[in-house]
Length: 295
Image (cartoon, rainbow, N blue to C red):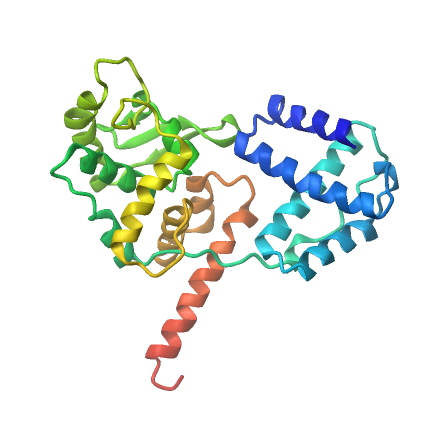
């Protein structure tokens, strides 16, 4: 099984151009799956049946795994078995008819518009670092970028005069995203008044630079953002994805259609975007219960 796994990871790297984070996730999920199959004394992937996959999913539920984790694992298993079938390593995909819809996605945690505004205004914009951090926060909220996409941006990707961002996103897909006026304002301040000072006479085309004039790591940027979350006093679990989730939900709450949000976030599958609809329905229900006089 290890041989097939390594061949599959090579395929995802060379053919699908998946990011390193995605590859790590696939490998972790499939090794967990293989351990279960080994417990069942299955050593040949041709022996795997639909019932085995269902047993594995039930075990995850019994272990109190989050619904989102189970859905991700099922997706990993489906795609892996499909690859084996297409490569004629096996003759069937035992997971193909297992419906993910039966495992409802967890409604993502998000910030209200007031909480977002509170967070964006925390950096001290009298300092170089503060202007840079304000620009980063404004960009993450305005575009819904993943942190990995944000740290990979180059100066040439930003077109301030026309207020848009053009870059190569997940899966090497070129994406063009509009920029709001506040985002443009802070990016302009950062690019013309702060970034030259951070370069330290070094040639570096990466858009956002650390105090040492280098590119951020994913963990480094998130550590930076967490400091502002702590200062804000926001009593929610805020993750690197929270501003992305917040943008999607705010757009839907204000009338944006699902397909537009899908394109903005770079989702390949519309079903991924649909989880945000649940949050807007929940908010509508809460508002109805609170304000309708006969609720």
